[in-house]
Image 1 (cartoon, one colour):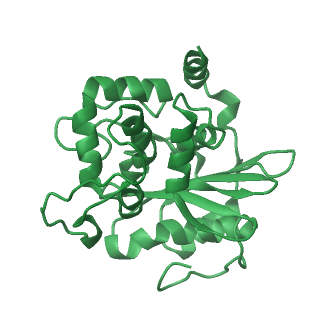
Image 2 (image 1 turned 180 degrees about the vertical axis):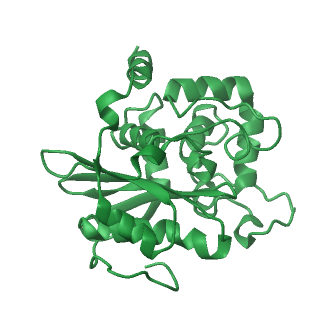
Length: 272
């Protein structure tokens, strides 16, 4: 019953849920990094929530979720009984891949951290398209379409999601309101911890399909969470992929959702 009400709520017209205040100052940050994209931020600290956006038209446009899909995909795999817990080992098949972090045995934590796609390809094969479609509909995830003519459906197939929809999904996960076991939702949230301070925790996941880069997640504070979803074009892979986090961190610092000074010029070198 709970799952049915959850799905109904997700399928209702979004309407005011998508209303957001445009932030012209964030356009300046994208320009500083010579990047084209969008970001949606929902600040739920305190009693009143604020929703802000850069490029509202693009924020409603759906793109391949790429590796940000590892968040719901892990929930699917746990629910399907394909993995017991975060300690289960997935043996590397010996195939050398371009990223060194993929070329080793994995557990759920390393597979999430390294974006080890072969682990999730195995999950997708075991789950199958029909069951994947049921999971997607139950979760109300993006366009809920796992079909593909060639390649992984969350990278090269028809599955697509907007920045607004990413945040809607993350809100439900944060509140343990997804139609999955409570312990599975808590485990997935633990797997996506990126860093933490004394009073805050950053949980997030990157994604890249070869053309579009994502960084989605939230920062937990004692007085509430701050959700974010950024996607951007990546015409220059080596230079652009780092910008996903750099731009998002700059914006979060400017609204005091992450520690640090609000940057006024682009950063270079390693992520901060």
